[in-house]
Amino acid sequence: MKLFERVILRLGQDSDFIRFPTTMAGESVILLGYQTFFDFAETLRHLQAQSARIADTEWEVTPRLIQGLGEFLDNPDADMLVSLVLRGQLLIWFEARDRIISFTPTARILSRSIEAPITESVVRGSISAFVEDIDTNIGLIRKTAAAEDLRTHTYWTGADKQKQIVLIYRERCANPRLLEGIIQKLEENLGMNVQNLQNLSSMLGFNPWTGITKFNSTELPQEVERALQKGKVVLLLDRFPFALIVPSLLTDMFAVENDRNYPLVYTYLTRFLRVIGVLTNVIIPGLYVSLVSVNPDMLRIEIALTIARSRMDVPYPSLVETLLLLIILELIIEASIRLPKSIGPTLTMVGGIILGQAVVSAKLVSNILIIVLAATTISSSTVVGYHNSLTIRVFKYLILFLSAIFGLYGLVAGLVLICAYMASVTSFGIPYVHLMRPNGDANG
Image (cartoon, rainbow, N blue to C red; front, side, top):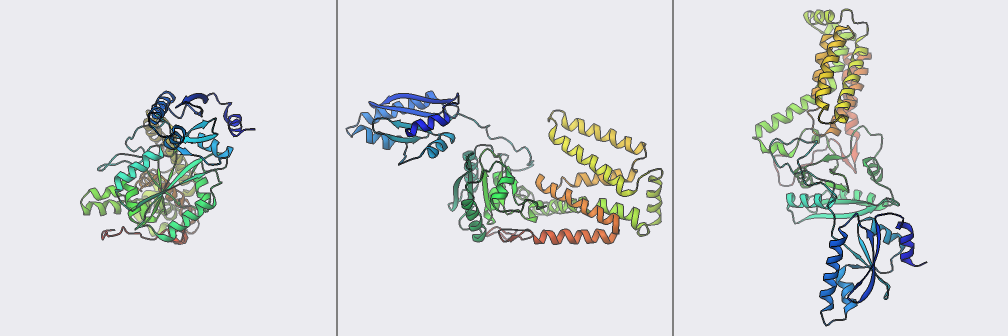
């Protein structure tokens, strides 16, 4: 069976797959490709015009045509040709000479235009966000960084589902150990299918059960430029409108590049507020349970009496009522993400108010607990990145259970355990609590 027949046998059942015979400069050719990837009429006009220009020269037509149209494929196999077609390339087969060219056609617009970020709000700064097209994202990074030593490497991964991954780094800034480790993992696991971040984590050898994200994802090119300057490495995944920054560090929870568009004093005050938000989210629920159930003697008598009055007729212990309300708040947060944007905020806000008032009136929880958990929920959104807010939302449950058992001693022990765990997490030898400074920047 001829090579092209094997390709047609594998792809020819698709309605958008074309096998178009035509002539170019007197040579019979067959065009193969998916017409949904490109503008077929415009591509055909471009090919005919280019072949006509080559035919007008005094050189031998066919060799010049083969050399000028695209990339000549020397001894390709069926898998290679199928992979090229699936990437959007157009194959040109010269029947008489049995030559195959991979041609880049006139592409259709299959991605949305550059828009404002959806998950990262920018008060003052550039609002151009990444899109699903990986080439557009690389262009945004190059335009923002404008560095001569910016390097990109492209990898195609997957045995049956081809996925493009682009590795980006600054040659003079990148951590050599980090860069070497990532390149080694990518080259060793090119056969793995990478369709999501869990697959990519497995490809890079990260522990799938870690409580801390190993990627700091962002929609903003300026955040990528800052990360590259610090010596980090950036990964772009095709059809994924985020840049993945490796490694993710503790400081990424509190600092973003747009903070530098304000006076220095406000920059540090804003970051200090984010630190307070993280501590509030992690500590306050456990502190409430420990002071109500285990260590009420640590409170002033006036506060203790106020809490006792608010919990009068509440049938559950403080741990149960706190867990009950925390789970309800987690459900509200998840619903606000999944609901349509036109009704989501209104529905969750009204539902939260009605539900909060109802549980207090029914004497299922105390009034003070409503205040405590409202502050906890708000503070979880002060950190940078939704993935980081998930981390601290999980950590607070460890503190909560230890505080319910051991009181304030359990709270302190939980904080020590969390700090020890974060200190033990590494990404390619770089600790999670490491501070990476931009080259030539004294402010950090």
